[in-house]
Image (cartoon, rainbow, N blue to C red; front, side, top):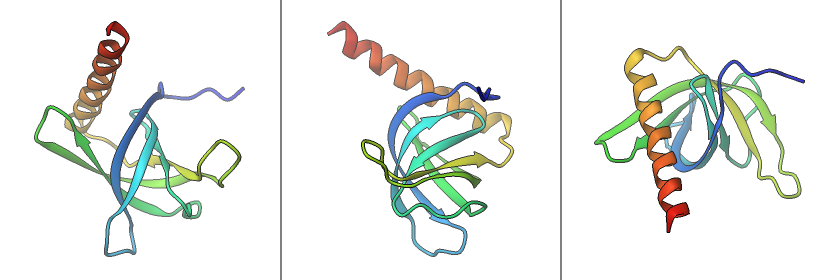
Length: 117
């Protein structure tokens, strides 16, 4: 069993991403998020080692994170699972970690509100 360094949180969120050698941003969906990285649903998935930037909106704040990372895992499209990539973030500063925590907190609050209804 493989142990992860950071807890992953399922977080379906639309984001923009751009491969390092591209001019235009494209649309993707976050599948899960941690302080160490993100799984991004994109098709076709780029190859291992590809660098990209992800723009992540932070609800309830006028902030959009722009985080660089590297593709460390590729998942081709499977039955019941869309294609995508595991992206390891470049080192995050304290402010970026705080924004990721805000995003997770927002998601948990909205989930609890749905459950209470």
